[in-house]
Amino acid sequence: MIHGYSKVAIVTGMDPACVAFSSAAYAVSRANSTKIIVYNGNVDALAREIAAYGPDAVFIAFGGDMPSYAISQATRDVLTALRGTNYGGDVLLHAFALRATNLLSTALDPDLSQWLSQRTVKGVVPDLANRRVDIVQFTVASNRLRPQTTITSFTMPETIADVLARVLAP
Image 1: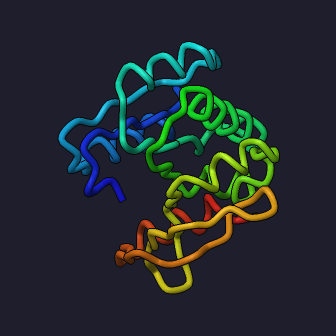
Image 2 (image 1 turned 60 degrees about the vertical axis):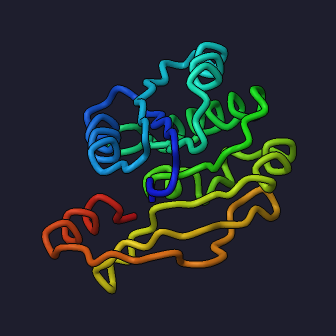
């Protein structure tokens, strides 16, 4: 998912799962420049850091140990920061952020929804039944994301699928 970009900002939290997500994303990024930005709750500082870096893609990588309400608030804050800086690049979302926000329905208000509808939005979507991970492009409608097309799929090792099945269980 982090291919074809010049500069990617990975926005994450401090819990161990967030650090693992962002480290893995950093390791596989093929962008010319990739920066991990740790969000600590200060929307203005986040906006300044993202604007100063000037990425063409921002990967929102919250999840794991964070409760859903915290992921939803952090995701809303990142989107608010991006909108506030007139960010024009792509928005990329980790599977846990998509799940915790119910495809952003708990993070979007009408203004954020309108702004996001003008961006390219992609996400990591596990397909556990078929043991693969899909990279999906979304559209924005009715203050939530709607899957539009699967861009690519990767086979998921059984061990990873089993762990994800337990982690993502309702």
